[in-house]
Length: 395
Ligand SMILES: Nc1ncnc2c1ncn2[C@@H]1O[C@H](COP(=O)(O)OP(=O)(O)O)[C@@H](O)[C@H]1O
Ligand SMILES: [Mg+2]
Image 1: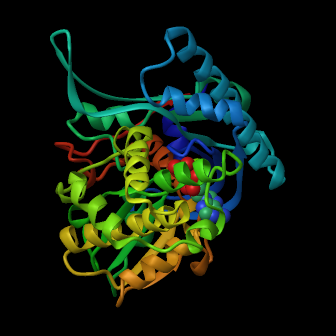
Image 2: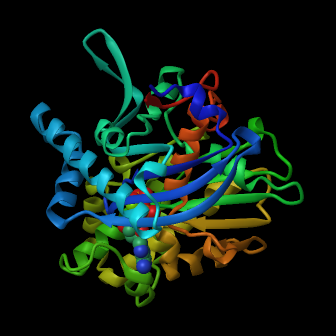
Image 3: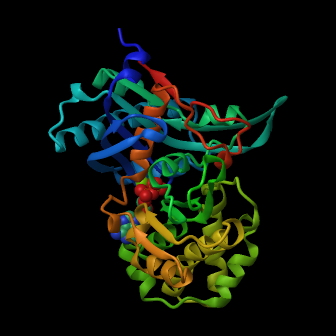
């Protein structure tokens, strides 16, 4: 019989973190050794793998993310299928680092978000807010015979928060700096930033979604490559285009999200297919070349980061550390560097970490906090009325 107290009392824990992000590109799995908890947390990365989804499954996930397709039968199907794929990725990261499955102490699994509803919507007599992550965690518990923490977001939402962003908490644990201000930018489907002022406290952390990360770029890369490519590899297509300043200004003008003060989060409901179709229509009216539009939407991702910092950070950070798939887009990185004069722009790789593993590592840490009974939210980031211990624990 396992007890949560036994997990908490271990000196170090071997933890797997699992994440499937809004890009629907696949599952990221990190294997880490965690010592301590809270402000004493120390993390050593042991292994990382990404398991890409097959094309037809990815397309189905993207459709389901629109919220309108799929019924209860398909919800069950997709949850079990994803649960199996989470098991496969967890096994793969162990295999590749010669780690026995039985030595894993704990798994933190974010699951895959099918629908995120931070603002209330009327449903019968209720004002519904919530977040639906699927990928049945029981399958992981069975395959590894270890504790599994999952379904993190809803606990924060029950306390009035947006259930996102969650990574700023782990950014604070790992990256706070006594000497200088640091911002951490993760470029997944959406861009999220965590701003850690010099020697800041938890209460002083500022974090929010900046706007689109790769989501809009991916959609146009797919369209203009006629379905051959899901993303603009290394930013090569955008590099061949020229930014249209008229189009860029028009995009900024119509984007109310940028002006909303944090806490705030966004997703496919704002920058998804409908948004992309609207941009494409406008491009045709203005007769802008496809690659020029790709260059423009790439610049726009960087511009959203600049605007977010200008409006909501207390001064520009000394250093910006970029992670996530978007950190491989060299055109996007170049734009960030030229817009953020005076800030040292680095990738996680530049610091000896892996740019792709950050979110998976974060869920390993959040799970570690949960079993140690530590609150693992930053109310400054999620807007909740008090900090909570997120995650449902399977023993
Ligand atoms: N070599 C690359 N060049 C440009 N973009 C890339 C590259 N590799 C990955 N990406 C981008 O990163 C995205 C996946 O990033 P990821 O951090 O996994 O996001 P999410 O958390 O939303 O799944 C891809 O959809 C793609 O846009
Ligand atoms: Mg991903």
